[in-house]
Image 1 (spheres, one colour):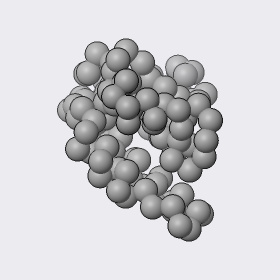
Image 2 (image 1 turned 120 degrees about the vertical axis):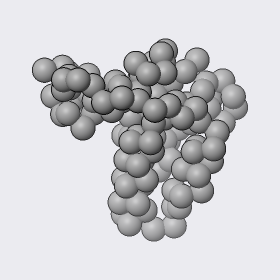
Image 3 (image 1 turned 45 degrees about the vertical axis):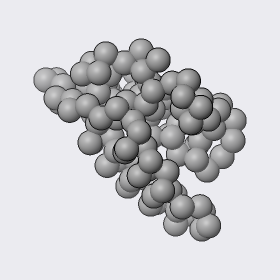
Image 4 (image 1 turned 90 degrees about the vertical axis):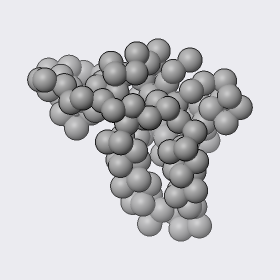
Length: 115
């Protein structure tokens, strides 16, 4: 199954437990395939650094390096017109379209709500 993770799910899986952690475990175990674009990976890195500052002792970079190697990278063209109420979230939809992903996993209401 091809899955795109919104940044909030990825960060929650790295720093906390629960369903987001279970999703990362499923990826580690080869049960799902993560799809990313360069824009999504950039956001993961930026937010990961912010979280490292809040939670000293947790290092995100090794996980993101593994993700960059193991995930399927797609070149997603930007959407012609903004769709999400937060246009910054459109990159997840663009990636889903480009990769024909099965699922976008998010807890972000702005990503789920269209304009």
